[in-house]
Length: 148
Image 1 (spheres, rainbow, N blue to C red):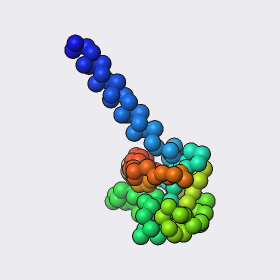
Image 2: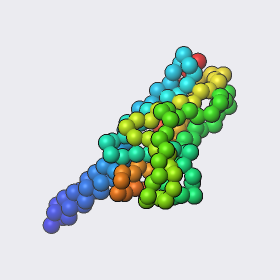
Image 3: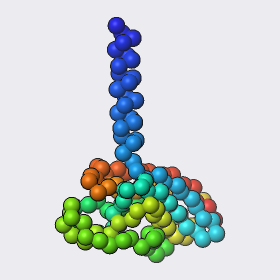
Image 4: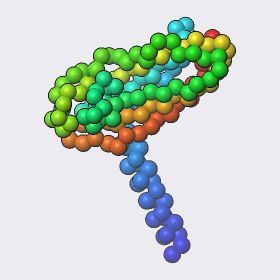
């Protein structure tokens, strides 16, 4: 009886984990360009899914992609965070207004000035949507070591 109980708990855990992980429709890669002194994050977005750009009016409802870099002594952000390609603007009937979205792929770049080697964390917050649903917003955290 105890084995049956443990088996059912294990199956439930695996099912819940698969459900949660299966809802992330973006696969991210990170890199540090030593030459450019730039963090580069690239998201491959599953077919039929999209992310909302920070250009989207926050009062409409969709949660736009946001990027937060941890702060450290000897590390200074240079300029603004760059998003490529330019987001596509269109009217979204679900939110009743003009939105800006990315499909297929998004690249995020942020340049830094370093005094010495440092390890930072980068947190991406976003929600993925298709034409019929939006998934709850998620945070993806990455750790990168930056060096001159």
